[in-house]
Image (cartoon, rainbow, N blue to C red):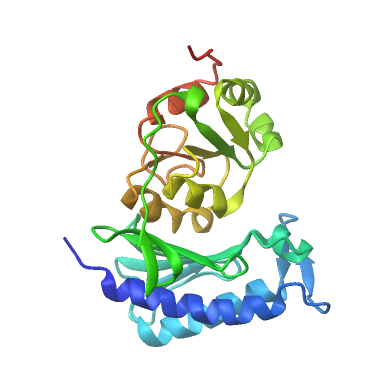
Length: 271
């Protein structure tokens, strides 16, 4: 199995640079915010973070491609190879611009279409999560202050903590009723949203996290962390993510039940 230790070390350096920019702009009185064509917000911090990461990658990995939320896909001068980095400079921009500390930089490495390494840095929370194939999943303030993490062993929905992004998005997807039934059947349900629900899942603090609509940069970094922590990650069709732009992430034990109930769009009462 390939070693991704050097790639993870680089991801931490990229996150250090990102954090130094985003933290200084968080709650800044002169933060500049625009609306993109899809009506989602983008701040000057989003753009500055992505530009800094791209500049470092151009020097450190000149043969790797880069896909970022704000500036799209860039191909290295030698032509696109098998590896490319996927960057979400600030996941949770709406939180960021409102002063809510749940936001982070997402950095992923893909080989072909497969995410093989991922890192999430949430400096306002003082925490990072990272993982790569064969390297396990870890969390802490930095590499030297980290602990290995793993998903929970919960096997029944009646004992499960269920996490989701927002109910309107599930209503738009035509699956509101099965979502509501899952929430009724769960021990607890909360909408933590964005990257955070997936990281809580990887740590074993929640048992399921679902979203009906995602872009590659929203999810690529999360997949290696969740799966290396022992979890399962597919789209709504049951295909291995990144899939069709949706996500079902679980501790593995509950995956088939959640997948069946949401993919079919049929509510079933758990007993």
